[in-house]
Amino acid sequence: MSTIFPKWTNGLPTMIAGGTVGTLALVVGVVWYTFTPAYWAVGYMPKQPGGGFNHQIHAGKLGMDCRYCHTHVESSSEANIPSVKTCFGCHAEGKLQVYNDSDAHKGKTAFIREAYAEDQPIEWRRVHKVADYVRNFPHHAHVAAGVSCLSCHGNIARMPEVWQEESLSMGWCLDCHRNPEKNLVPKDQVTRLFDVEDLFKAENEAKRIDNGKKFYEERRLAAPENCGACHY
Ligand code: HEC
Ligand code: HEC
Ligand code: HEC
Ligand code: HEC
Ligand code: HEC
Image (cartoon, rainbow, N blue to C red; front, side, top):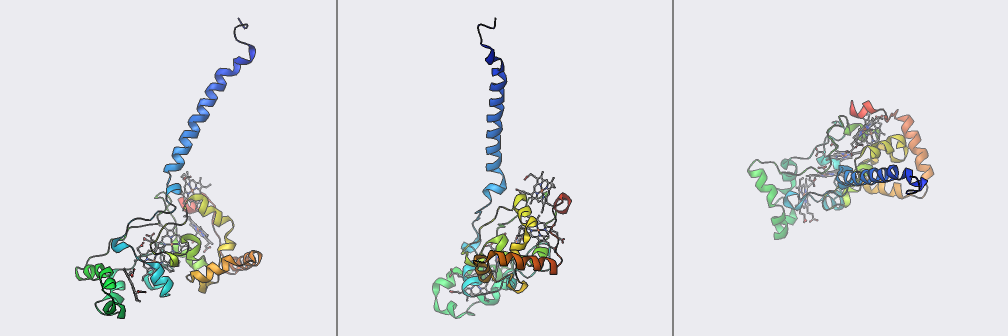
């Protein structure tokens, strides 16, 4: 009988089955990867009210500190978005010279005065969100440890509209937790993103890591790698 099919073909059904399973796994893998937030969330930039809040103008050109608006970043496990009142402080009718000088500016900022007059919040759409089953992401612990906003959000002060710069995946968290040194900066620079950008671009990376190691010890930091720290 074995003359019809040579001996080597005995393994063929297994090989074909194996190949099919392999291909299937690959397809499932690709689909899984493509539809996992870690893939599509980088670059996520939802359409915002009023064309979006322009960080490039406010935090970049005007040099406003992040904490002027994101007041709880050092104290709360969730960062906060400012209320209309914060915007109205500057954008009330006629308050800024540019309001009187430019009809275009008046038009672009009208939605603030309307929201304020109607006592309605501006419906900003959330950009960054870690998966719900990640129970513990203490935002303030990171800021207080001296990790700059830049490490996790990119240079927001260059963004006319906020987009998501990093994947927020588990691998991303763990990459930093395993080697946090290079992301630690002098504490007074955490929100000075252009300074941090320069620091990160500096040629002498070895020195930066050395400094980071010192910060890590001085500040008595412990970035956890055990599952329970983030998932309970
Ligand atoms: C004048 C107020 C103001 C200042 C100053 C400011 N922001 Fe914002 N920020 C906002 C508002 C309003 C939003 C919500 C609209 C949006 O997401 O585009 C926002 C959104 C964000 C988001 C995205 C939030 C989300 O939904 O995921 C990040 C990250 C952020 N800001 C970081 C910063 C950093 C870093 C700085 C300092 C370099 C800064 N902001 C300075 C008002 C401000
Ligand atoms: C400390 C004062 C101050 C605060 C607070 C402030 N702004 Fe502004 N904003 C300005 C100034 C000054 C300009 C004009 C800048 C320019 O034309 O270069 C401006 C410009 C703008 C513009 C026009 C942008 C463009 O493309 O020309 C919008 C829209 C705007 N702000 C929205 C907001 C919103 C929303 C908030 C609250 C989250 C806010 N601003 C908070 C000072 C402020
Ligand atoms: C270690 C990384 C990390 C650092 C450092 C960091 N952030 Fe975030 N930030 C995140 C992540 C992740 C989220 C989403 C959190 C969630 O879903 O609970 C977030 C969310 C936010 C939000 C959205 C809050 C909301 O309710 O919509 C703002 C605003 C924000 N960050 C601003 C800042 C500012 C300003 C700084 C610097 C002072 C900063 N972040 C530093 C990782 C970081
Ligand atoms: C760029 C660096 C960086 C990234 C990215 C980062 N972390 Fe951390 N994380 C740290 C450092 C540094 C500490 C140590 C803080 C301390 O000891 O006070 C820390 C501490 C923590 C802690 C313990 C806080 C405490 O009070 O002891 C948790 C929980 C945590 N991170 C969760 C996360 C999660 C979840 C993510 C991803 C969504 C993440 N981190 C991303 C740097 C990072
Ligand atoms: C520093 C925080 C952190 C630690 C420590 C951590 N995780 Fe995660 N984990 C995350 C984040 C953030 C996500 C969400 C990933 C996403 O949305 O893409 C996640 C996702 C997951 C998922 C969903 C599948 C996936 O990969 O997206 C599983 C399962 C998981 N973690 C198991 C574990 C186990 C087991 C450990 C311990 C060996 C662990 N995690 C340690 C932050 C952490």
